[in-house]
Amino acid sequence: MISLGQLWIPILASAVGVFVASSLIHMVLKWHNSDYRKIANEDEVRSAIRASGAAPGQYVMPHCAEMKDMQKPEMQEKFKQGPVAFLTLIPPGPPTMGKALGLWFAFTLGVSIALAYLASRTLPQGASFMQVCRLVGIVALLAYAGGSVANGIWMGRPWKSVAKDVADGVIYGLVSAVLFAWLWPR
Image 1 (cartoon, helix red, strand yellow):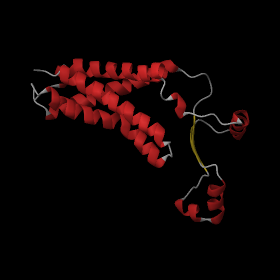
Image 2 (cartoon, helix red, strand yellow; image 1 turned 45 degrees about the vertical axis):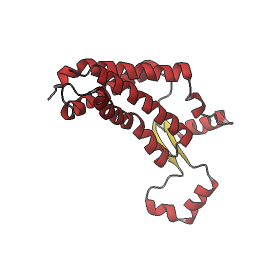
Image 3 (cartoon, helix red, strand yellow; image 1 turned 135 degrees about the horizontal axis):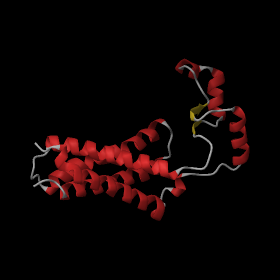
Image 4 (tube, helix red, strand yellow; image 1 turned 90 degrees about the horizontal axis):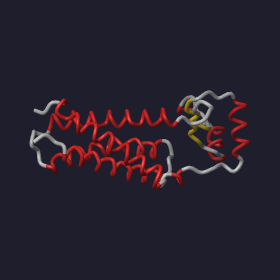
């Protein structure tokens, strides 16, 4: 059995590789820019939300405290009239890319550690390039893309955006798979 200590180079290479790939996707290709649209009366909507005193957090409109409330005629009418929305509010202030990038790298490192743990328990030393690629690639794909599919199902995220996230997950899975397979102990 392979120890995690033997996999520290593939762990770091995978985390850095995915971090670089995501940076290229978001800063060079910018294929996610079209995922976000502007509300025509943005200033009025912002003023209304600010006036409501809503704190950072997740909100849903219309809001039902209990599932049985969904059947009430007045609630059904709110849903028919719209808008129906899931809203996430973050603290006011300029975006802090440093913190977000640090958390993203920590996530890629966590995924890489999980990949290494699973691979070290299921693959032998000297496993073939394709054996390592198959296992690491599919698990990485699930780790990087699974949440987006769930958000498409439950949160109404547009399927075009979900498809782009899944494509990202395929890329991140391939990067992780190739780096782990290339650096797998022989």
